[in-house]
Length: 134
Image (cartoon, rainbow, N blue to C red; front, side, top):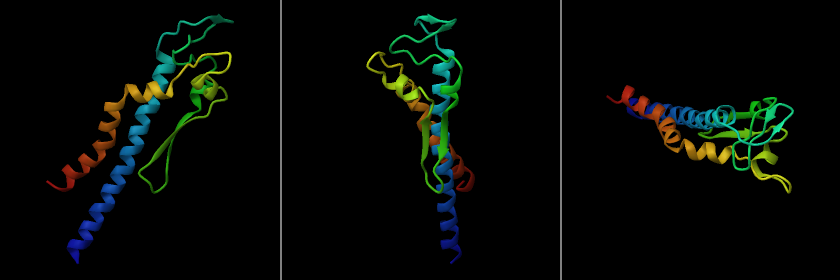
């Protein structure tokens, strides 16, 4: 049964690599969301010294609280990760309101890094396969 044991261990190692790859991919989206919030120009109105974002632009960071509450969570034992935008104003900014057009971050972040998401998700599995199956 040594061959079966080796294959089961290899499968478990691939599952571990996939879990790490999915988390890495979610982290790429998180990092792009942070970049959009903090490093892109904003052209909205100025309120009390803070330049707001204009409709359609990623939201501008004022206190940093909304951006700080964008987090990546691992799903234990699963090849799945969750990105949450939990700031007090996140949903209002992302989707807009009756009186304010959306200032989206989640969808643009995802769309901007699709290629990097695939690369990040596959990197750990490829690395494992190269290491153990040469």
